[in-house]
Image (spheres, rainbow, N blue to C red):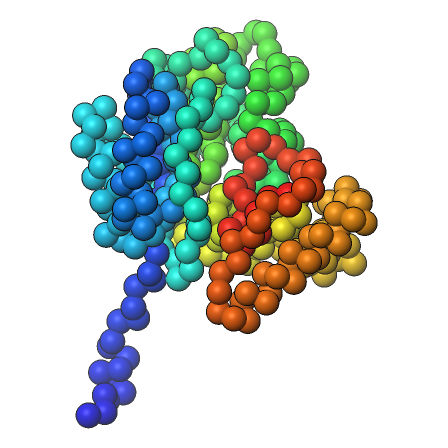
Length: 341
């Protein structure tokens, strides 16, 4: 039996296969090492991939997989009374964002290296995505993008200050070097990041330094792009994300960027038009940081990736003896189709 045109038009497109859940929570977990093995086992049993970080101060990470599997892992986490209110942000994709699952133990779930700082005690005031534009329109508010340079390079909020940091640990020193933030009357400060976690620490730092009016975007840029319509948005560009989507736009739709498989900088179509861009080998940001021998090995890795794609396989890659290109410790995880050098 043939389906009529109206009926076909009414048929809903199938939902993408992979659910991604980004999550974090600052909460005291003195027994965090004991949580790793059961959590890893739960993820493995449910076909869930990604990275989760556990520390005394809480949990942070992103996981992806079949919807039922991801929800099973979330239920496992919520079963711990301390994580019962753990929130997460969801998005969907047709391709697996991750190909490995790692549960790691860390000193901090996001590294700032200010030992006396405790976001479980004091943070800035949350601002809902719907109220963020009004705050940014206040001429007395200093708006700071707390993300790294490669993230800011592809998108940020109109009027935001870019600290040009390569790692989040550089933010305290940058703040110390800003005359407008030192001495006298402290200005109002609004801070934002991808999902909200870095702002928890950065606003806690500002409060610790005597700033009274400190605000941060609740749920981060991702929540803003999810809830605020494009026609009302003050966001410019794309938002970098730490998985194979590379970037997303309004409605969390995957953006046009790709990762350089050598240095992992997000590349636009214009970047890929550069004479220094060689797929899987180099881009404008790293072409002069690789020896000829390293470039030859990267080219061979790319060749193996492409051969695997022709066979309909996913090339997970094998670790290569190539020193890493300069990058921050908050740099995106290794692309699943090519392990980090």
